[in-house]
Amino acid sequence: MSNAEVLPLLEADGQGVVPCCPPLSERPMTAEEAGTAARMFKALGDPVRLRLFSAVASHKGGEACVCDISDVGVSQPTVSHHLKKLKEAGLLTSERRGTWVYYRVEPSVLAAMGKLLTMPATA
Image 1: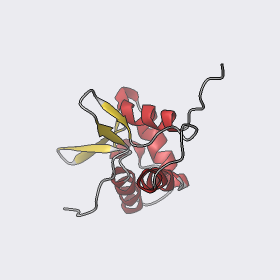
Image 2: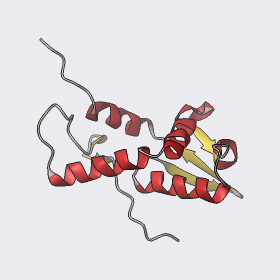
Image 3: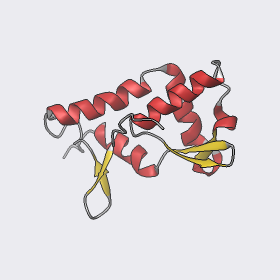
Image 4: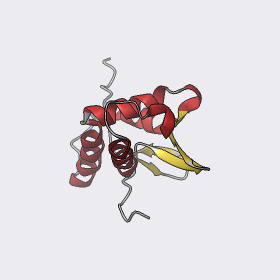
């Protein structure tokens, strides 16, 4: 059992989930918002993690077994380490089914990431 803290990219507001942070162009971020966004970007800043995140996000059915995405040029323990970091950043969720672990990127996470980087429409 890990005692690592999972950092949410999304927060519940009673009407669904909303991004943790406003779009970068909306207003300056608070220190807490910047910390949360920085952890997300740091987790994705590693090429192996970015490949794993992309493999899960693009996998048929929206989820991937670790056995289907582990061919990224590093050992299986290293893959597990990177998947753990992505989970801790709030970018992936997982579910154990028998001996395998299945990973999923919730659509709301991708939407929140997109909103964070969205520029306002010009009038």
